Image (cartoon, rainbow over all chains, first blue to last red):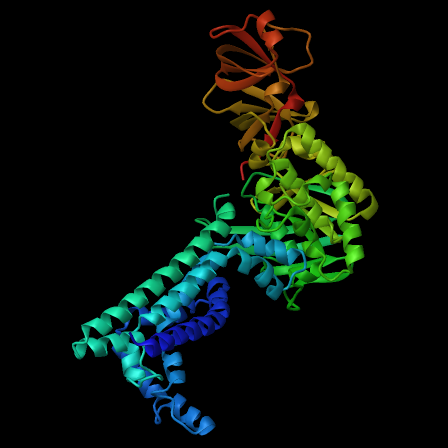
Length: 224
Length: 365
């Protein structure tokens, strides 16, 4: 069992889902409440990672992050080292890859809110920010949980993008799925088994804890 | 005073374009906005509240401009100082009654906040519900909480969109009394939307009739709703008989005109109205304004006396609804006692008696 790869994968998944949440909350809010006609364009862009093969996404990410890509160049001028084949590069590419899994549950839960509750909040003098934190977020909580869990799980299991952008550097970019692939290639089925089983168990425990907690807290409202 | 002069057109959401076009002043005290559902009453409130932007015109309140299309002014809802109770009430389901009511008071010092909260909870008799969630309240309790929440911020205008729908008369009256005594101090304009005739009578102040997005009539309820001039309003105001006909003759010296009802020999004498001879009109008559007699009455002032046959007798609570065919079909309301003493049943021959002034000419739009 490769503990290093497991820790790296968990670290990656945690970082990505936390940062995705920060980005997705305002993005989903905007998508759910704007009246802009061109909204469908942005919706399509957000959903792209769902249909593109991870290798295609990883390929473009690699070009963007590489020393000749715009992002990579900018990064190098700031920090003096390239972005590709680093943990940070991996985080950025993974965020892109898991974006729809964070944004779509949020948009769905925001859109299902009764608009009159937001109108009522405005009539009572609340700013948009106050309405967001006092009304939208508490009522859309199941959507927030779903967004975090899905982006976490999706990042934990990614393979193609990591391989394209991160390569296979132990402790830096060698995630669990890469490690397992490596071991299978090397016919180390025992090692692959251990890591795979461990990942399976962690995923199951995390998901059931989240769903269990989610149900217990929120059901009295949802079954109203 | 709240002065409104707005136009707003809706195309996308509806099959037929709908236009709201309102010019009206609202003074302090209750104004009932009455009209059939879909007439634009709620949309008007949304425009006043700032939740919907009109296309043209302006909204002013005591010299302050809420909205002015040409000057590009539109005060956000937060800045208008308006209390608004929606038809759905929109209580926050995750907050307790106390948190719902004090939601609009975030900036106040704790002591002042508590004082206001207690005063308003007391005024609407909901002190005992403080810690409950909206899901645990009855319909009437929810309506009280929604009212309390909208007035606790001491608004300058109160908009109420059918806030007491579904309550029985006694409970409705009690809540209205609470609201009235609250407004005795505040003296702000309260716009009260309803399509329920009983509520109009219970509030009893000024009524503004809205039909198809336009203000059709305004005044005291009796003058507006007892003599409606629009078909949709007559239906909403509960006129059971709406009969189509054609003006046959003006008798200016008698102050009446004769209307022949379509597809029958029936003629009615109705008060002289705006319609010309030959015009198609509709005549609205309340079922309770028609008398039934078992033999030809004489020596009456009523000018419309017609023979007919009873087609159906149906008892609904303390009212008996009798369908009479006199060439045209009439619905007549009588008491169960009258039904017995006249021995009314299917096939009975009766005389219909209708006063001229019980016939209201309404113009098809």
